[in-house]
Image (cartoon, rainbow, N blue to C red; front, side):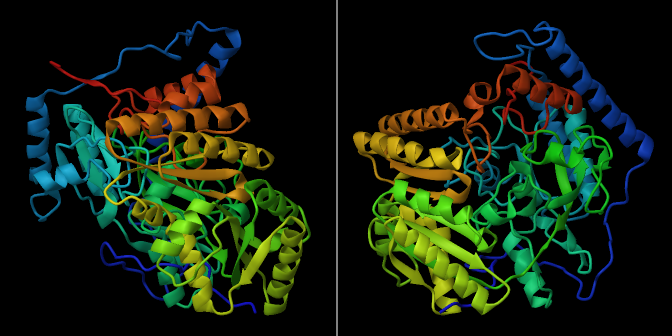
Amino acid sequence: MACLLRPQLFLRVAKRGPIAPVRGLRVRQYSTPPPSQPASAFRLSALAIGLGGVVIGCLVGSQLFPSSSSGPSKQSPPKYGSAQEFSQAIKDLRAVFSSREGIVSTDPSDVKGHGLSTNSYHIGVDHSVVVYPESTEDVVKIVKIANKYRMPIIPYSGATALEGHFIGTPGGGICVDMTSMNKILAINEADADVVVQPGLGWMELNETLESEGIPLFFPIDPAPTATIGGIASTGCSGTNAVRYGTAKAEWFLNLTVVLPNGEVIKTHRRSRKSSTGFDTTKLFIGSEGTLGIITEATLRLAPVIPTSVASVQFPNVQAAVQASIEILRSGIAAGIQCVELVDDNFLAATNKYGLSDHKYAVSDGLFFKFQAHSPRALADTARITKEICKRNGGTEFRLAGSEQEAQDIWADRKNAHFVGCAIRPGAGSLATDVCVPVSKLPELVLETKKDLERVGLPYTIVGHVGDGNFHAQILFVGDEELKEVKGIVRRMVHRAIALDGTCTGEHGVGIGKREFLVEELGEGTVALMKSIKRTLDPLGLMNPGKVSGKTALRQGN
């Protein structure tokens, strides 16, 4: 029996603050007016000239970015201000926001809490100050003060990132916490788009659309508490990627960005299509706060389509992947919203620690989410999927019989990180991801599992098998075990790249995957990324040390 499950709901999360949608609002409204065109044109022209120079340099030879054992470009890092200048910057911030309480914080628990994550194995680094802007204008004021005193700026929102994206900079910096900027500014139902601030959670957006009676949703579904700004900044995705793609697809129509010099730009208009020059929206998606701070986003929405959920068990990963390949190459591919690989360790942990009452056979398996316009079409998709799975050794095909059962089954999958952590209470957790062409996934998973079994540490594996993307979560205690875990991850990444894959399918680079960029992309591409960074952020203030950058030096250190 198929059930009609609204696709975005699987878990309730705590709200970070009031959301202020306006019922019936159907027109475009921005809280920040577009900047003057000459300044924006000059900035983007400078970037274009810089890109052109890089391309010419790459064509002429290697003189522009000489090769070295440590990778491309050995330019000296910029220097930050002194401790005294940082102290004065904090005084200036307090003065600028003196009319409002709670905007600027130097409380020790605040600066420490914003510089680490219990979800990450990376060592936390405290910020000097945390600032909570409420508008684009507030962000501009913060950035101008940072420029005056050469003080690093680290954006922060949902804090779900796993690769050290928002940890502080050694020597101090300004953490810009965007969670107060969590409003829905405009809903354009006829155009199927919405204008939002970056601190809004994707689940909160979808819940608001549902409560307004609007049959649309935002389909990018990473961690439950992830925000729109973080989704754009990491270029992430989730279980829906096999059907709807990633944040680097066409879901972000426009971004309002405060550049490193305090200038405000909009990357696009609200039209669905444009062929006007460089795609500057994509320039900032995946840049992880190193090129500017996103303060508004125009998002494309998708129609809500009825769904149903199923699970099935397989004798091994090879059989599960082969079944998924056949399904996604068949006539029912359009009806597959999600197809998720889960290993035996994950299902054993879910049986013991999962939130639902459902129990699963302890073997490798697949979780499916189907979508179709009618119950009959859903039933047909489920029937054909079951037949293909059976041909590939699939057993115990289980189709949810109610909306509640479907939500419970899908919540088991979406809560994978927390279930994995429960296996070894008090242990550290290293959760990482890689992605390869789908046909190469069984080889990669099997070799990685052999490596994990040899080391003997507890782990789980889940993956977006339709994309060739899988996640390994490894639990460790102490520095010696962490060293072993890092070795496992390096070998996993090297295997993925050797199979024509990537070191990260959706978690982003941060500091955790930075060492693999040259191996994956080549020196020329990394040099191009660094050239763009230097063009937009010559002082090196924006989230230094992340992605391809190096941390600058405080003067006197």
